[in-house]
Image (cartoon, rainbow, N blue to C red; front, side, top):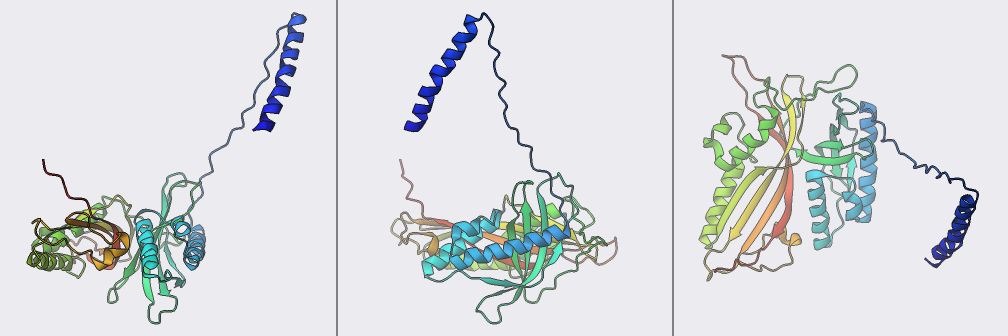
Length: 353
């Protein structure tokens, strides 16, 4: 700061002297042109199968560096959307338990790269890949992932990862001669369920069970009608403890993606929120206990009489082609799932007037 002041003090008299000289000669002093450097926006970067594979490999390397160091902040730099929430929750759970964060070994990915316009962002691609947990025998599973880049200057980030169910079969994605997959439009009516409606159908089945209209187009499973059964059982158990449990499934603000399969159907990946509220309505009732799966997100105390949690859930579903009239119609099927509680709170008691 002192050096800056001395420079100004030396320059100001010089400027004044030059100005006086110009006036003495009776000539007007021309103002110097100030050149402001301009920066051009980054050029759009084409999305190709080759650039997608490079982005995938870069992520795998950077993810392992962050996990090996136990560096949550670094790990979050490579994630976005729902995957960012799940990554943060995983790191915090490991820290709470005193365990190292899991590290992964990946196989060769199968890439599903849509042919997008170079200047139409966000860019995205999907990949299925074998993944195992280092140090855990028999942990190998197929994982479906999705990556996004929101602008030419942005890095590729993992926005979605879900795990194939053991008995589910991954549909063959249609790949053209140039290595590209066909991206599904949100309103594609060639499928049984329009891609934009898959999330709502799943949430409805989870909330209403096999008796809902939505169950007519989506198969029953542990993560569809099974969610409904789990909620009924948990609500009953809570009532026996003089507690009230509310469970709600809703869409998320995170993106969903879909690609055409060889059968004419679609492989769609998407997310749901599951919000729960466990409340002791009667002031004389003991406060609810913090669920074990949410302990790492709370400080171990319940300030009021309520515990709220939000789980981020990632899914993949096979959405079959719409059958011709008179033909037997197959149902949509959820084939992959993964998730965890990503947020928890114990709000204080509400003051009554």
